[in-house]
Every structure is written in C-alpha cells, then in structure tokens.
Image (cartoon, rainbow, N blue to C red):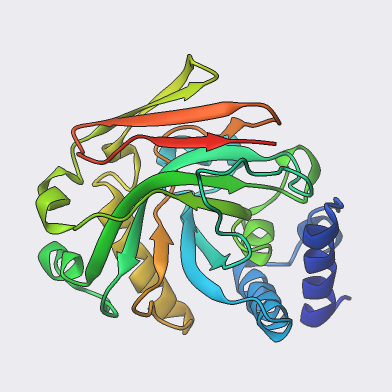
Length: 262
C-alpha cells in the first residue's frame, strides 16, 4: 500500500510533467476523503518547500448542475499558487494541462480572516475586493474519470486562475445572488449560467461553505490577501490552443472576463 507521501509525490510529478495516471481509488477502493485531504496537504508542503507560494484557494463543484456529470455530491477545495495565477491579458499556454476545461467564476479577495457561522453581512465585511475571471481545471485522470477522494488529493483539479481586476465589494454586495452569465468561445455562445447555480444562494454561500469546511478539517483559515475562486457559474468547457473565451455578466456590474490560449 502506498504511503501518503508516495501518493503525493506521484501526483505532483504527474502535474509537473503533464503525465496521466489512474485514479488512486482504482488501486485502493478504501481511499477516502480524509486520505485525499492528507495527500493534498502533503502536496502543499512539497510545493512550498520548493519555493511556490500559496496565494489563495479554489472551491470546486459548488455548481450542483455538475454533480451528476462528475459523480460528486459536495464541494471541495484546493490551493491556488503564485505559479498557477496568470495575467488574463496574456495568452495562457496549455502545455502540461491535461484535458483542460474553462470555468467562469467570481473571485473574492480576503481582507480579514472570516470565522465559521458569520451572517452574510459580516462575511462581506471580511472581503477587500471582488473580481470576475476564469479558472482552468485539469485532470491527471484520463477521461475525467475519478471519485471525489481523487479530486481532493490532487488539489481540486486546479490548473490555473485568471482573475480580472478587483473592485470594491460594497457597491456590488446586493447583486451577488441575482445575476446571470453568458459565455462565448471564438465569438459563438457556448453556455449560460445563473448565480443561483452556485450553492443555491450564489458565490457568497460558497465562501461561507469553505470557511466551515476549513474549520472542520483543521486546515489553515483564510488569511488577509488571499484570493478565493468560488466555483463555476456554467458547465466546464474543453479548451484548446487558439481559442478566445469571453464571459459577460448581467445583473452584476463587473467588466467582462476574457482568456486566450496558446
């Protein structure tokens, strides 16, 4: 039976090289969410030891419309690194990102550490900024075939974050649970989404869930300056080099997001 460290090193090597590997649960059907969390924590340690800096967290599977498609039944989270956070104005190379998919997301910036159980108004007061952008997710498991524990182990399938500019929260607070998004690829409409697709009550509910989950796991709480990407507002769509993606919001006064892939 592989150790936590061995599994972590194998997953990190696959991430670094763009290699694929079978889900961990194939070899060990007893590999559960707690084991996946331990592997993720070890990968975090390994990445920090080699000089990478964690700049935020991503929340995955907050959109309940995706649960049946991917066989999951609850949100998960993973770290965002300085090495995976990219300027949306520059084309993003897809080399090394296995079967990449794009997700339009609301991204918060933390101003003060939120604690579990805060009312929405108090949670909003912990934020220092609000942005609209994209996450690119990637799977080392071919065909996006996995169980929830596998996705937790590999950092919630995080590949890259492309945040837009951050804006003050207060003028936009009342719009966070009643907006829609339209997504285009190369000028053609690819999909639509609604804020209520994210945890029923929108991105702030996803943040509240993350705060509770971190406390339950005993994971480090959110720190001032961290970014939190709150989950896809639409289906996740395959991306390829040469594509240009654009997302526009209706009902939330943030600029459109755009991403180009090389």
